[in-house]
Image 1: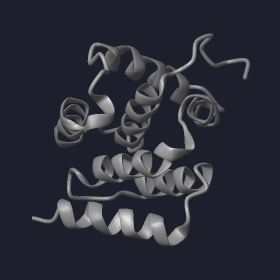
Image 2: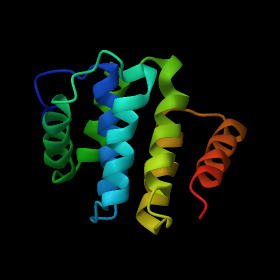
Image 3: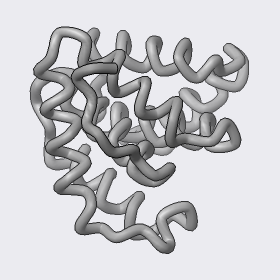
Length: 140
């Protein structure tokens, strides 16, 4: 991957990067989405030893990648390198929660979630259950 950063992401960095990418996918990072990301990092056990100051760095890497023509592929490459398979469903659940946080799912968010499902090779029934849970948690 010639245009990717020379470093690798930790599993937690990958989760944060995916949440940022979902939030940025519609080119409108809403406050509710950013709050959802911050809350996940502060509250979930997977982030218990994560340095929240890394969010700024990870966000910049994601923005840099998304500006490139093959940036999404590069981001998925970083995820394949840094995210263990046991966290694939966690990654998808976090992505769905961020996408649902503002109460609307736009076309670009839905398309990105579809690509994430494909890249992580998630079982369709498992993905549907995760999506339904996110929808239930974010109903008003």
